[in-house]
Image (tube, rainbow, N blue to C red):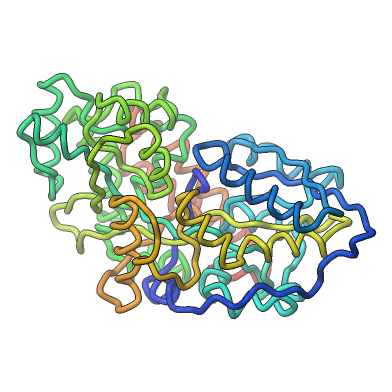
Length: 442
């Protein structure tokens, strides 16, 4: 997500993510060498991976000298505010790297702003190369619209060296976490690096606690089949656990609503926080900012009375082509290049993205922390691990708005978990009523 909320898929989907072979790069559809083409790209690569991405773009243009790339790297929140207008104007980018899901790219697709990719998928063999369920995550009404780049995990990072130094243990239950926070705060730490400005960060925390309370199967029914309700005692407990109980235990800053995501990560990088509840997309930034640190990554602690303790996993942002682009064939050529064997290796090793294609992780040159995350994802192949769902990327915009405002209101003490659970259900019903006919809920 990229730096936001990745799109998360059911266990059966994730089990297939790693089981498909990579087809060879197709040479079909390459632009005529005499045609001079400018591809305008908006991406969200603004972190450690920018150098790698620039090298990938450069290598493509060297192989295709008739094509030039004009790049604008846009922060996630800025992208969400401007991409609709830019695409509708016809003067915007040819390609965007954007969040998947009905509340994000789905809105653009429903507005006719994204080009269907079915013909290009057939031309280049993408459906043989990229995991089918991942492609389903970027499809709408039976049409493929995007090529997904990332599979992520959401959990909790910890600093092994600092924990050992302070005589603390990684908490495995929420009750242990509360005690941990009390002890860490007494030692001068902000125990958990959590922020909620501008508000999407809380989506991840809610996804972890809500999946724990009702279990992935019930969450799948709720999100993809509209069976169940958000206004239940279990969901109230999920909200209360993180946004009330952990705040009262001093687990995160009193001013969490004022902290940005970068602010919170900086607390962890600098050793001022011992835990960081976020996603696997941060691995590269952790390596850059904490090169000598020994870090671990675990699922959110077990909640008393919950169905279980689950990783949240699934697909992140994807590449899309503007419906108004005059260079869709060349744009598709670039997308195909992104999924060639050599470039996939660079995405994984150098950019820190786990691409939804089959790879031999033993042959990859990655850090122990990232290898541990890849190994967790590999367990999905044999069905040993049951993954939960990230909520916001499978939810309608009305629901996400209710979450954004609602979690901030609870953190500030202006709303109760019971009130928010009722509001979430009302927002869900409004979103489902407003969904275009034929829009699938998966």
